[in-house]
Length: 111
Length: 115
Image (cartoon, rainbow over all chains, first blue to last red):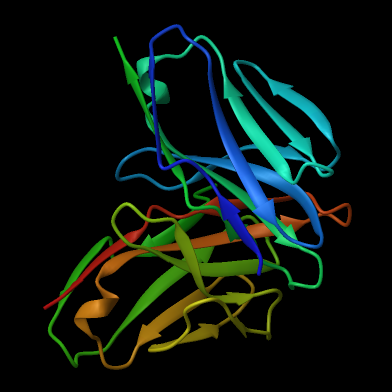
């Protein structure tokens, strides 16, 4: 089947670096996206990896390795406002024009 | 631009009642989507519309119907609400670039409680 797995919860301290992994089982997809969702809010787009390698956007970076069936979101210089849920998502080839979301990781940033 | 708007924000229904959730976007996007999110869970696709005039089932379509009224509007209807449909419903829209990059923009959500 086609699924995206993430750790359910990650805890880190303010100022630290945290990595949220996304592993998948699929025969093909166009790229890996990441979305952030604060409690009670709507998901918002963070980043996209169409090719293998690292994409950097400010404090956030995202990585994809198709050969390892794995990607991650890296958050640096953690701030309290980064406490949220993070979802990876892919658009599978042959799956029509729709995204499939991962199970989600709740990040808790502590003082 | 308002982005993606949804109405209502909150709704309480009794089992068996019907209702329509409204969604509109002003970004001229071709594709629109309806998701549900249960507490502590990810997003599950109910229905989507790749373009005006087309609709397709997602992962959890049972108990729902949709209408793509025009390019801007995509509504979700519950004909006979059940407690299992208690959830937060998100509408989203997107523009697809041929290289595969797609960003979905989400509305604020509708919180539905079915008693």
